[in-house]
Length: 321
Image 1 (cartoon, rainbow, N blue to C red):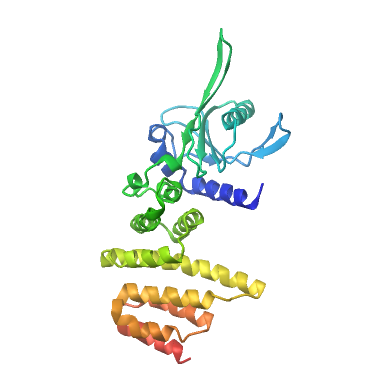
Image 2 (cartoon, helix red, strand yellow):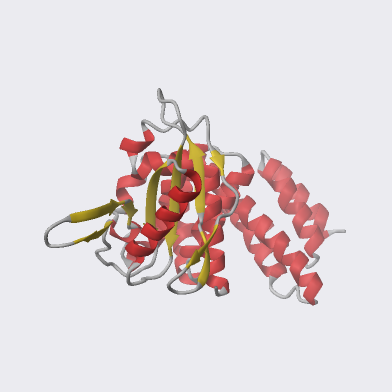
């Protein structure tokens, strides 16, 4: 498996581990209403030997749970598919057969087709003869590229928010999709770890170029002030964490080029969001700071600054060091 596919699989596995209930509620509500999400257990990694091909394959997400009001356990198997593969429906049936043989439980199979091509994937696999229908294996399928992202912006569902990055939007809508994503994230008020994961997931599939990023920042300025501050704090916090990771990696590799400029840009964006044009002179002072550790300290203090005077004192104090 190449690095890109491995990263994709890991991202989707983590998304489902954190937000399985929300995923099912957003895309398969009829099943979600009956699954007892208070009692779920993620099974250890299952390795399956694909006999005809002689390959070992790892099943992505397997959950043991039960239905509300019923005795006995069931399995929910979710298999994200990052690329088109002829005969995938048969492969999913082989997984199903292996799991049924191993566990002897009812199984709910779910396929998530996450590649960018728009295709009409089957949701069944059939075996039989002209005189006898032997088998019809069916499964849930999700094809995000066929979904309209606008239908999910009011749901405040974290799984739907993340998967907006894979939905069917036009090239000219990329900035607006991200705007709505961060607005959703700000409204949900998740803990920092989950928020940062969702940001990382989204950015992995929808990363704005420099021109789009400038448009994105201008659009943030048109939001209600309170909402803009919440969104700005969320996005800046994530960028700060990404910068810190890059800073550590840069030290290991002996490279910190670009990190100072990025941090200066984040600080000035935060100042502009909180204090508007009145912060223009302070932003000029930020450009004079070239110590990455000092910039990190200033960024952290500016989050707590309630007035322009406090921000000015923080920045000027750092410049004079």
